[in-house]
Length: 252
Image 1 (cartoon, rainbow, N blue to C red):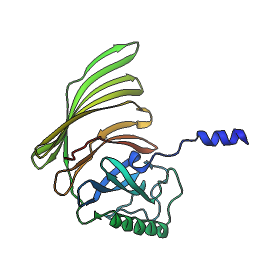
Image 2 (cartoon, helix red, strand yellow):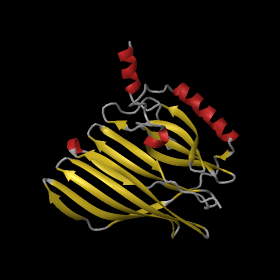
Image 3 (cartoon, rainbow, N blue to C red):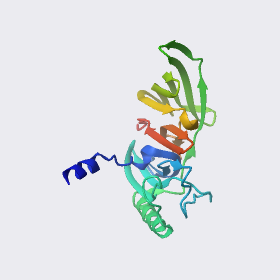
Image 4 (cartoon, helix red, strand yellow):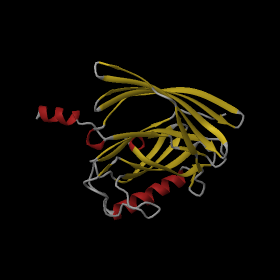
């Protein structure tokens, strides 16, 4: 019995929905613009299983992940409501239970003062990659390059990230680290900061691939920015994501 309990304790719990977000959509902000509610599709997908019955998004399209509503306030998770479980980790949520969970979450959003008629804006993001330099030693290719990511409101750049990437590749497996330097502009205010990620590993086996991006959202008055660094891993069996909230703080 002791061995069984020890083994169960070693089984890792799935990450919170916001940390495995495959897709993020803003659905409302508080009046003081310090809290945002997000529709979060989380937990990855499996090419073998497919969507659960009743897993249909607001646009009427089927999805293969879980669904949650997450409220962030001042850069931290305030509330997290799972509406439909991730099929990769738990049994499918039946439609009646999902409807009940959604209504309860909406009531909580109202109590938190989230205005669902004011979703704010999804920022346009552009990416530029510089030329890589590489060297090979003992069959391992080490490469370095720089990327610039820009999130814009109209023609103005609200958030800029400069990313220095180091990649080590040994035929199948990539392992790399990334150092981010960010610059945020909000009205007359400008802030800067840094963040490091890695080591990040992925395999090109089974048509494996890795991409990343910068989901970024602005509050209705444009003074608050919420942004994430999103890593996407995929192969023939399915896909998953690792999402990191950027530690931005634009409060005056």
